[in-house]
Amino acid sequence: MDNRPIGFLDSGVGGLTVVKELMRQLPHEEIVYIGDSARAPYGPRPADQIREYTWELVNFLLTKNVKMIVFACNTATAVAWEEVKAALDIPVIGVILPGSSAAIKATRHKKIGVIATPMTVTSDIYRKKVESLDPSVRVTSLACPRFVPLVESNETGSSLAKKVVYETLTPLKGRVDTLVLGCTHYPLLRPIIQNVMGPDVKLIDSGAETVRDISVLLNYFEINRSRELNHKQDVFYTTAGVASFQTIAENWLHQSISVEHVSLKEALSDE
Ligand code: DGL
Image (tube, rainbow, N blue to C red; front, side):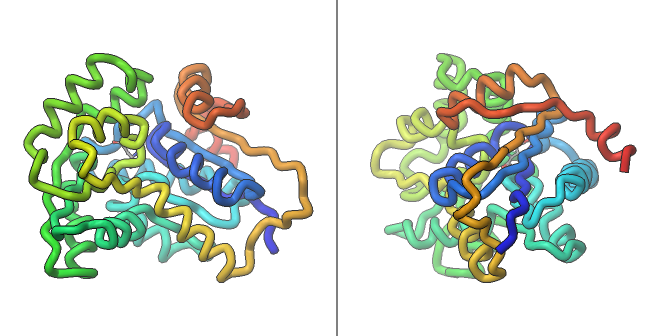
């Protein structure tokens, strides 16, 4: 038993797609979330910068005494997960392996598409993971740099979002039977993505798949939170404005939450 919270990190609001699934599958676990919306998107940034920012998020979560860290961000997973996992003595979970395995299970004709940020696509990590699990599968990757700004600015229901998703995904239409949403922000655009790709294409939510792994690790290390503790206090930190984060988060999670602004510089210099 370990009653400390689970830490989640993302460049912004995308990791909430993982949190939503955690709240559904493991509702008694307590959450500390940090979204770096002030510096989102991470995807078009150089790897060294993403690594530096990710370490800041990790160090911030460590000040909150978390028992496990979930990289609720594909881009940070692609760049820094291996390194952080090797350096810490608590479990560190990434989103890419669970998404890859789920896509292999779902594909009928061994044609998997991956949509992700420019860095995740450049790293080629999904293709490598999928092909290492099943070399007969064909992976087609596509960077969607215009998606994250739409989500961060709460424009997922707009006609601009429809236009951008349509224009971006048209080259993939008819070429894949399974599509990995390889960025945790993308499930917020899911209805539009499904509409453009057509009802026969199976969408894989990499973040939601990750919660199964979280559950397995909590059991394996025997660090579940006691079910006898009724009260829990989830806290969501954002490096940008509280109001915007709160609006997007509460719409997505269908519940009111506690959001605080944090300056990482100040929080980490206090240490
Ligand atoms: N949500 C993140 C991901 O899963 C990062 C998006 C970004 O900041 O570019 O890749």
